[in-house]
Amino acid sequence: MVHPDQVVAQQARPRPTLLSMNGVEAKVIEALRKQGEISRTDITNLTGWSKAKTSQKIRELVNKGLLVEVGEGASQGGRRPRLLRINDRLGYLVGLDIGATSLDIALADVGGKICQRRSALVDVRQAPEEYLKDCRALILEMASAQGCLPDQILGIGIGVPGPVDFGRGVLVAPPLMPDWENYHIGDFFQPAFPSAFVVVDNDVNIMALGEQRAGDGAGIDHFIFVKIGTGIGSGIVSNGKIHRGSYGSAGDIGHICVDKQGPICRCGNTGCLEAMAAGPAISEKAMLAAKNGSSPLLRQMMEVNGGVLRPEDVNAACREGDQAALDIIRASGEMIGDVLAGLVNFFNPSHIFIGGGITNFGNHLLVAIRRAVLRRSLPLATTHLAINFSRMGPDIGVTGAIALVNEYLFQPEA
Ligand SMILES: [Zn+2]
Image 1 (cartoon, rainbow, N blue to C red):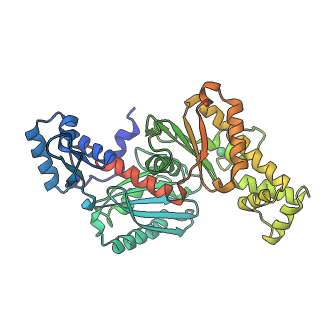
Image 2: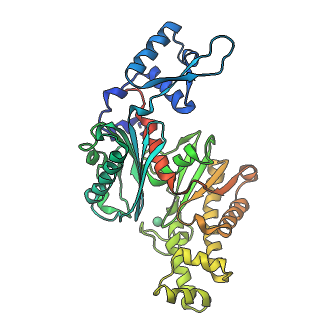
Image 3: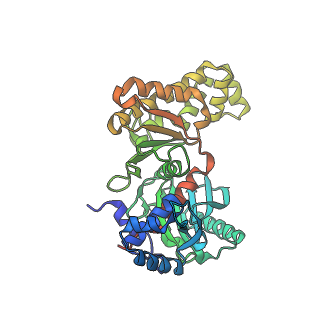
C-alpha cells in the first residue's frame, strides 16, 4: 500500500521545470517556508554542505529565481549574516474553497499572503464543467487585477465538500454533488493554467490546514477540526500533519451512527450523527416544535418566514430565551459531544476546534459539546483538552487550500 502523500503527484501534471529540485534543495526550501528567512550558516548546518558548496548552491537557486537575498540578520559576533528567503515574485497560488452553495477563492503569493479575494453564490449540484468555468473566470479576473499572467500561477489548491480519493484527486460517491464522481478537476484547469500544480482535498481537511497555518492551531501537533453546517465532518492533524488514512476518507465522522432507530441519512443509513444533529436536523426539529405548539415563538417566526425555519432562526429564538429552541441546540451539542468523546479516547488530541455554519451559535452549543466530551472521555485524555470555536472566520478554507498546494509545490522530484 502506497501512502496517499506519496502518490499525490498523480493528481497533477508535471510541475514547471523551474520548481524541479533534488531532496537537499527541497529541504532548504522547506526550512525557508517554515521560518521565512534563514542565513547561509543555517543552510550549511541544515545540509552538511561545505561553505563553498553552500555558496554555489545558493547562487544556483537565486539564478533560478527561487531565492532572493534580503537585509541582514542579527550578528553572532563578526559580520552580520545576509539572509535568504523564497522569492515571493516567483509566481502565484490559488486557493478554492468549494461549498454546497458558496464559493470562496483567493490569489496569494508563494509566501501564502493573500493578494486578491472573491466570493460567489454558486450551487455545486450542477455539472462540474459549468461550475468550474465560473471558477476559471474568477481566477482570471483576480490574476488580471494583480497583474499576474495565467502561466505565473504555479499552484491551485482546492477543497470540495465530499469524499476525495487523495492519491487520484477525484471525488468518490459524493452525496452532495453526484455529477462530480471521478471527475478530474486538475485536467479541467490545465489548458488555462499550464504551469499550475493542482491538488484536491476534502473541504474539512483544508479548514484544518487553514487553522494550522494561520489560526489557533499553529504549532499544535495533535488536534481535530470539526465542521458543523449542512453536514458534519472532521479534519485530523496528527504529529503536525493531516491524517488522511489509506485512501483519504479519514475524519468522516458525520456518518457514525448515534441512533439505529433514527431518521434516514443522505448516505442511505439510519441515525447518522449528521442526520440527527447538523443544520437541517435542527431546522426540522424546530419546525416540529412550532407545529405541535411547544414553542409559540418558533411558530410565529415560521409564519413570518413563509413556513420554514433555518438553523439561524432557532439560534435567534434561543437568544430570546425560548426553551424549545434551547433544548434542540443542547441536544445537537450533546450528540456531537458523544461522538467526539469516542474520538478523544481513540486519538487523544490536545485541542478540538469547531467551525462551519453553526459556529456563531454561541455558548449553548459549545457548553453541551464540552459537557458530553468530559462526561464520556477518559480523565487522562481530557485533563488538558481544550474545545473551542475556531476564530479564523471566512478565510479559513482558502488559507488552507493555499497551504495545501504550497506544501506539495516544492517537493523533490520522485
Ligand atoms: Zn449518513
